[in-house]
Length: 225
Image 1 (spheres, rainbow, N blue to C red):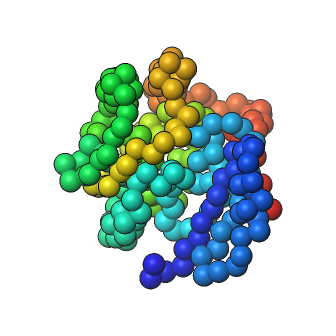
Image 2: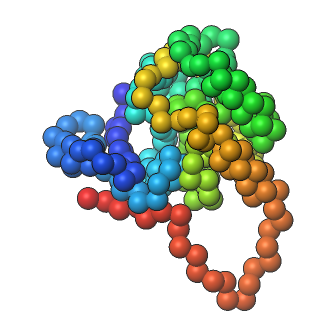
């Protein structure tokens, strides 16, 4: 990269040696830092990572590297040119997708996209794990993010659109990686509930400010080694 970069690894109550490896990572031109997130859930972990940086541009990708990292150059180029939200889209006509999902999972994904499209209009793929943002926008929207599970991307993008930003989708090379923890049988009902809660949050009327507002703890603690 032609400018300084760094990597944040969010440890979301992992039971392997993730935290130990990150804390002992040797110093180099790209700093690697650990952020702890005690609240379980991918949404909570990504929120902790976004709030853990002050960089002018920030993004996240799935740790299994299902999305080829060549897309980073395109994403950052668009951010530098003035775009505020750039996401990978497996539905883009220029994307190359190797998908080994079952027919049941594909049907579930189709249904999810239909529901998500009602919340984030004009976005064809809310769930590709490759998203980059203007840093200020990312932190403002992450601070309001309340979805801890798989559907957090929908709320995150909807919050960006709510603040007047356009979501720019780019083609990616994406490969289905083994080891996914998502199960249609176990997670579909919970995800539909999450989407319902997101809809309610987005359409809720602002509450009048109380004279002495009660303090509310953040969604997750952000800690540094």
